[in-house]
Each structure stands twice: as structure tokens, then as C-alpha cells.
Amino acid sequence: MKENINSKQYSNSRQKEPKSAKIQTRIFKYSTLIGLGIFALIILYPLFWMLISSFKSYDEIYSDVWNLPSTWNFSNYTLAWEQGIQNYFINSLYVTGFAILITVTIGSMAAFTLSRYRNRWIDIALLFIIGGLMMNPQVALIPLFEILTFFNLIDTRWALILTYVAYRLPLTIILIRAFFLTVPKELSESALLDGCSEFGIYRRIYLPLSIPVVVTTVILNAFFAWNEFLFATVFINSSDLKTIPSGLMVFRDALRTDWGVLLSGMVIASIPMIILLIFLQKYLVRGLAEGSVKG
Amino acid sequence: MNKKFPLTPILFLLPSVFFLAVFIYIPLVQNFYNSFFDFNVFSNSKEFVGLAQIQKLFQDDVVMVSIMNNFKYAIISVIFQIFFALILASILEDKLFRKVAPTLRVIYFIPVMISISVIALLFSFIYNPQMGLLNSFLELVGLDTLTRPWLGNSTSAIYSVIAMSQWQSIGLITMLFIVAIQKIPNELYEAADIDGAGRIRKFFSVTLPQVKETMFVNLLITVTGSILVFNEPFILTNGGPGNSSMTLAVHMYQTGFSRDNMGYASTIATLTFLLSAIFALIQIKVSKTGKED
Image (cartoon, rainbow over all chains, first blue to last red; front, side, top):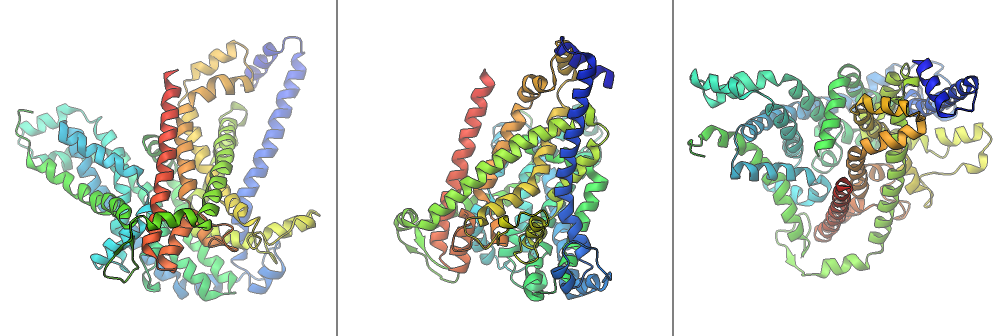
């Protein structure tokens, strides 16, 4: 591989000796590596600092910014967990779980219809759903607050679940529909001849064939619901019902100077998504890329 | 269609249509409607005030400050997240860095996965004037003169917030560019090799034209995101000190939920929506004319 690059550089600047081209490539390589390394450090160091400081006492965080903790206070973690994170964690699991379940179920059903039929009404429905991608939660905040108040849903977990479902549906439907379109028509036609119902075709043929795209949408929606901040802050008042992102704010105000405990809470909040990144990187990246291009 | 349209497909579609109608489209229309009224959270009736709220919008200095901050956000984000991320992506896809690229990719992507409230709390530690990492670092390398209360200073506050956003989002845009670069047929690069094109030449004549579409999408994400930005300034500075780091969405939130002036907050939301829609339309238009070339 190296030879290849060098010879190419050589032919580019014919009057130069191959040796100098080689040196040039090498200088380029190492200086770029240093740059990449510095950038990686800028990204990682704050996170590393968060991790080590979460074991420190307040005094140590304040007076000794750079060093490792003199004693590792694991109690920060138990304190954080007991003083509220536990609650927020469970709420986040609840909200994320139901939001994913509903979004993927009704989204895949809609995608089924939108991929199997073609007429004027279906086109309108498709436009209606794609149009949903253009709308932003920030702009709808006040009317949503009114609507949720009207349904008596403000300050319940369902205020978050229902709104998350709505704002995640367009992308979910578009991704699943694109996959459904690739399912061969013959499969459903022969199933129809065998007396299979429409629902049967959806459940027995389309869904099982689409596991990869379903996994992608599950991950994308988990990522969204776990980290969503605006709705979680505005629609939930009781500290008991808050999810992790908004709960951390309550936590900060309640703890005041107990920084070690706050940092422990922040670490706990981040762990599930980092695990997701490490193990399901492929699905996640593909989903984000497809989602953004189609959006 | 001659075949009788079965009932099941319609039933399949209904729940989704219902969710979108109730939670996306009705709120949008409602928001326009609300812009002409004066009301607060617990009032039972809305008082029609016509164009008074819109008039107020033009006399509101905070709106001007917010728009300027949103523009600063957009410009800086485009520089870092479009130009820098594209260069970063093409370096990571270069054969020379094949060994380290997968690890670096994951490292750069980690902040994207972490909740914005964790990131913002972390940065409030970093920017802390007494023990913050940033000031401690500057003192360590002898740049004491540069230290300042980053978030407490009305000149630096908005830039500190913007800097945090770059730190968090650059990994996402880089990843989107990487996916786009991986889709470029290898033959194009081989052909460029045969023509004796160097690294920089290949970037401009192969990579850049091939990722054009992704670039427009990323531009759209970045610019509309900057106009709508809420979480970062809200958590870090809540628009302060004074109104120096106010953005439209934070101004809207404060007007509606802290000062309980829902009507005027709706008007600000409408302005935000129109601004983001105009930018989106311009970009879509430009990207289409680009394609016809």
C-alpha cells in the first residue's frame, strides 16, 4: 500500500527524487497523526476528567483539578443512585421502552401500507408523514403544552411517551418503508393465495424479513428518547417523574456543592448510551446516515 | 385501482396519521393562531390582540440579540462542522491512517451519544472560573492573561456555548461524511491515481464533488439546528449574563414559561419557524440548481 502511494506522489512531481517524496509523505503522515491525537485528547480528556473526578471529594475537585483522587470515593456512586438517579433511571427506562415499542409497532404498520399500495390517497399520506420531518419540537412547544393539559397528561410519563412517538414516527416510517419496498411481491402474493390475511402478511412475512432495519430504528429511537431534554423539562414538573436529562438539573440544584455525587450521576446517565455505541455501532451509524440523507 | 381496497391497510395507517395530526400538525397551526392572542398558562380565555404581538416583536431588543446569536451559532457551526468535519472525514478515510481510523472514529463519536444535560453540566465545570479545566490549563501553559469567567462574561458567554456545541456535534457530522466517502466508487480514486493526482487534488476533484449531496444535508441540519438551538444555552447560561447569550428558543421559553406570556412566546416561535423554513428552502433551492450543472 505504501509503495503505491509513494509511486503516485513521485509521478506527480517528476523532477523530485522518490526519496524526498517518501519523506514528504512521512512528514504529512506524522504531523497529521499528531493533529488527530490532539483532537482525540480534546474529546476524551473532559470525559476522563468527569470519570476520575466522580470519585473525588468536593475539596479535592476544587483544589486539585488534575490529579487522580487520593482516595477513591465509591460512595459517591451509591449516594447518587439513592438520592435520585435511581428514580430518573427507572423513568427513563419506562419512557424510552414504551416510546420505542409504540413507535416501531405503529410505524412499521404504516410503512407496510405505504409500501404495498399505490394510489392518490397513499401518496397524500406519504407526503403528510414526510412533512412531519420538517416540523420542530421547539416551535410546537406551547400548543403541545395546551394539548397535553387538555388531555390531562401534563406531568405524567405519557406526556413524554406520546410526544416522542409523534416526533420519531416520520423517520421511523421512512426508514422501514424503504426496506419494505425491497421485499419481493411474489412472497405476499403466494401467501394471499394460501389464504393469508393482510395482517398475516405483515406479521409473518414483512416483519421477520426486516429485523435489521427494525433494530436500527429501535437504536435511533432509544438514543433520542434517552437523551431528550426540552419536552422532559417542560412537560414534567414533579421530580419523581423526571427522566435522566431533566432529572440531572434537579440533582444539580439539590446537591449544590456535592460535586462528586453530581459527577457520579452524570457518569451513570452516560453509561447505557456508550455501551450502545460500542456494541451496536454498525446499526447506529447506518441509521444516522440513512436518516439524515432521507430527511 | 379495480381491486377493492381492503380495510386493514387503512387501519394500519390510522394510528400514525393520528399521532402526527394531533402532536405535530395541529400544534403548528395552533401556534400561528396563538400568535394573534394574549394569554397565559391558566387563563381560560384568549384575548384577541391582532397584530400587536408582531409589532412587539419588532420593538423587542432581545429578539435582535437572539437572532444575532443564532446567526453566530450558524456561521461558526458551518465552519467547524462542514469544513473541518469534511477534512477530518477524508483524513480518516485515507489509506495512510487505516490502522488508527476505526478507533479515532469511535472516540470522536462518543460525545454525540451523551445526553446534552451531562455535556452541559460537564462544561459548566470546564468553564468554572475558580477550578475550571480551561482556566487551569491556561495557567498551566502560562497564558494567565487569557483566563476569564467564560460564562459570566457577556462577550465570551455565547462563544463558550457555541464552542461546547462544536465539541459535541463534530463527531456526528464527521461520521455522516465518512459514510458518504465510503460510498464513492473506488475506481474514481484509482483513475485519479493514474492521472497522477496528489492527495489535495484528489480531495478537490473526487471527494468534494462526490459528497456534495451529503454536504447539503449536513448544511441543512447544522443551520436549522443553529436557528432552533435551545438546550445548550438554556443549561449553560440561561441566556445570560443579561441577555448576551440569548437565542430565539430560549427567549421563547422564558417568555412563555417563566414570564407566563404565552401569546407573545407563540409569536417568537412563529418567527423561529419562519426563519428556519426560509433557510431550509434556500438551501434546497441552491442544492437543486447545483445538481442541474
